[in-house]
Image (cartoon, rainbow, N blue to C red; front, top):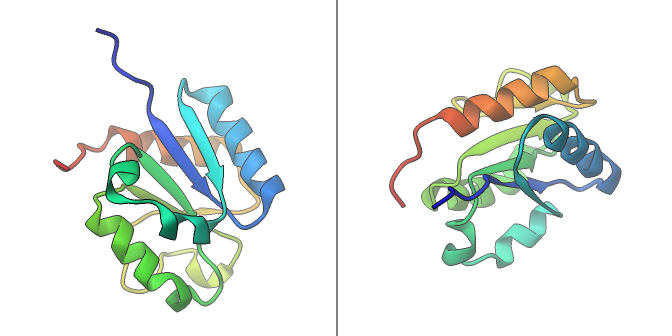
Length: 126
């Protein structure tokens, strides 16, 4: 049986930025990608989240606005990669410093390297 392709979720407020990330990732990796706005994640149940191998999550300048969303994804064992345009989060998001950050506008090589590294990490049992 052939293993299923990794499912990457891009949770981004700006559609064109999400399309850019999708293009860069799909050009380098054989994977499934779903695009949505970050607030739509709140409607996903545990079964839907269990299908996600990696979530690129857009972090606003005031990251405290999404702390509950981040904690919910961590609790559901969804691997995260933060994305941000803000200089304030270049070294991580307060309280979640272990989660890497991809800066926008994306450098394709850096984004793909971060995505590959996160996908290679041994997943926690769900």
